[in-house]
Image (tube, rainbow, N blue to C red; front, top):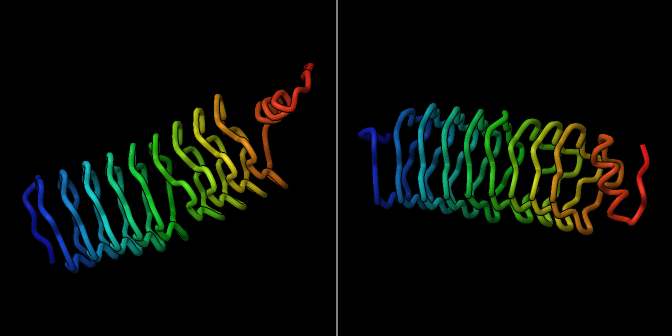
Length: 201
């Protein structure tokens, strides 16, 4: 079981079992976590800044109002994890298991989710501006009222996704698949204009 001061910097953690620990209020800066078990961890108001996570398990963990800023996640599992009102600005997720994952709002601006499997995920109201979702699977996902301005969705699969109310200003949608997606008028106009159509309302 882990016991920390309020702030931890420049520490390497390896092969540790933090199952069920409470990390609320703790700030980790430039720390490396390798093979650390965060399963069922609870954290409210924690902060992880410029940290690297490799082969870590976040299964059934609950993070509330927690920040992961400029962090790198490699081959981590978020099975049944909850991120409620969290900030993941500038973080990257490579070869991570992202589903089932519960996301409640939050700021995911500038996040690298290239190729991620987010099929069926509920990302409603999430701020995803400037994020890279190219090649990601968002089949059947809900992105209602999400902010996707300047996001890269090149070759993303948005089939049957709910995109109503989402903003896509300056988003890159080249070769994105939208078969069966539910879209609002604003996106319909944007897509029509990109085909060269003249939209009159």
